[in-house]
Image 1: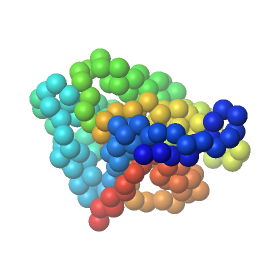
Image 2: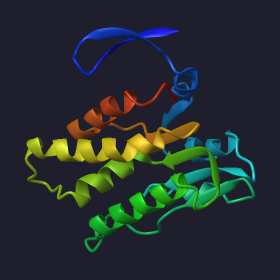
Image 3: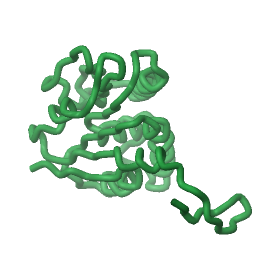
Image 4: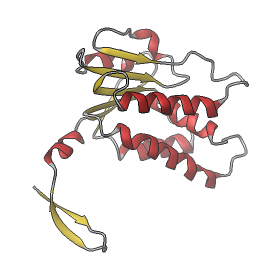
Length: 193
């Protein structure tokens, strides 16, 4: 199956599509819904084995981890802290999150068949806070949050099956932009009510 791409010289050319890579793009899902709608629990319905597990990272500040437990085919990673406290060191939390994700993707915690982030909107918030976001932040600063988020997402999207969950509330301009940006990485959005 050919596709039109732009080459290094800026010219259009027909190239053959890597079918495995193309199929992988259809294995991206965003579960979107209100709190307590079953988004986190539904992650256990996706494939995982003892050899190639379901790896579920619950974003810092997200509370969904209490609805699932680890088993032979599921590995769970989560933080327990109150994101509303003033002493949270978001820079350190961001480094920990990146380390865990990189360790999982490199196979340090076993094979990976399915990778999920529960509360992806909270990941974006952690990035913003780690990069200096505050009430008086200039909107031009948002580009560094978007870039950090994109760099964080790129290696995750190489996994065979990728699932994200996010709350269905979108109030600020930053959250609206986040969902628009995220939609370019996701092949399907399932809205849970």
